[in-house]
Image 1 (cartoon, rainbow, N blue to C red):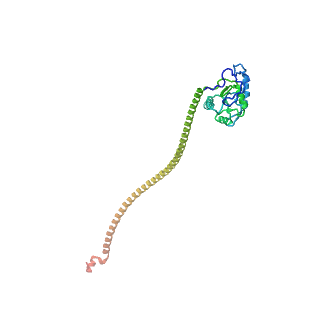
Image 2 (tube, rainbow, N blue to C red; image 1 turned 60 degrees about the vertical axis):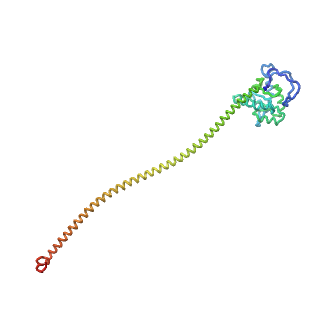
Image 3 (cartoon, rainbow, N blue to C red; image 1 turned 180 degrees about the vertical axis):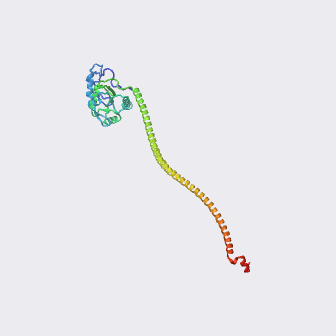
Length: 314
């Protein structure tokens, strides 16, 4: 099903009042024929001024924001969508037109979308608006919505594309279902790819965070190990110094021991010599004592052989 905003060529209005299937009263025509946009010969700039005068007023969005229409849309391309929270119009807007607008914005296109509600209840209006990123004419501003339909010559669901100056730049403001579906599918595929890339990035960031934490822990462990190694090095240096000192002391003791052994050997030799000298001395003393005894005997007159003979002693 194709969605056509304004057919090419003159638009002939029905002069009888009737409600369309969305419950909107179509305003009665005051002229049997009018043309929008340059090249139709019916005063394009006057029509642009009529559009700007009609659209002028507050616009609202689902977030509760409020903007003046001409301030918001000034110098921009406008898409005016006449729709409602009723299938299949709802399906077209939410599943085709909204993704299509997102695709255009991602391609760098600058424009604003104005939602003109065909909803019979404010509840349906709020429900619909809450599902879109559009600005909208307030639900209670019925006169402006009807006048906008009249100025643009719209009867039923439609999308009208208007240039920066308020001129209608196309009489076919939306694509066919198949084209819109293809574009929406392409956008959906791109969004899925982006989502996949984002998920991958998040996973990689988590992995990087995990690796960074592990690296920090390893650095902390290495720093602790480095402190322990440094302490061990200092302890080893102290032990080496103590060992070297002990070695020096041991060498000194060994040298002193060698000196002592040498002295002891000398003393032993001298002792042996002294003992030999003592032995010789003792022998000499004995001989001397014997000689002395014999001399004493000789010196005693009584012991003189002749005296002894005289005394009858042998």
